[in-house]
Image (cartoon, rainbow, N blue to C red; front, side, top):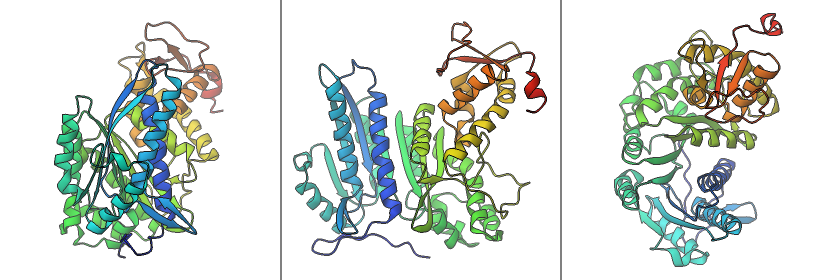
Length: 422
């Protein structure tokens, strides 16, 4: 099935926006706000250097029913401006975002329309200054953008929003280049799983698209053998999640589906980063925006990997990041954590850092650090299975908020309740 592209052209009707795109733009804007406020949480900080890249920017406006809504370029520009204004109000000496924006689209008429929208907006004076708008393929522009980010300073703080059509417009080689050359990049990449399933054949791995994401021929055979769409999505997630990490150079990621209430089409929204806390913040956003996200896996840790002992065609309840999913995730973490602490510890008497424990296992889980800390507290207070210490080794018997550098250790004697399976 062909992907229906949005088309912008001056003098012609705007494209109608789909629920998928509205949801993605909400995610982009919300994450930018969180990103800026977390990095600027120190009240003494007066500025932040940030680059935002929109590699498939489109024309900057859509028709949504009877109203016109902004596209991703204006959404990200306004999110940065709003975060800056909010921080300025709380700082005695003010706050300034030193931002650079790159908007790229392969179609000249799209860029022409975007320039028209920007000129009408509050950002007209920033065009050719902090805002760069260009026609071309993101793949061809990436190296120059990376170099310009490096020239701005040593932090290399950059967000790449790569809302591609389909699944192969961004090669894994380009993503590798981003992570290899920059210190602090994050990539939000959409990946149309349903389109990949529709398109898949024995020859797919030999196509330009297949080569772009470095598909394994065995994956194509396994997907085509499955009978259900749900089974195919589960298998793709299981096959690709490790492949993506090894192929992109990202240390942390969240690979969950973004769904539409009025469409059966699914997109994978991949958040790739070098830092566990960035991954945790994106996971928190998934739970906050639970009506948008889902994944065809389980609760708790080790929830994303492909298990060959489980029939992927079997009907599964989809994990929806709702209230019941949170309860299931917390219960799973309580069950799994004592074993994980034992396996990760140097020996039975040596505690492990809670942050290190989380970072080592978070990629394969919908859990956030806050949820893991909640499970640890229950294991300490209700089941008497875990002790918590400060980094200096002082016992924390009553703390209800745990830190990333807190230490945890299994107690020698498990509680009677847990040993009885209650």
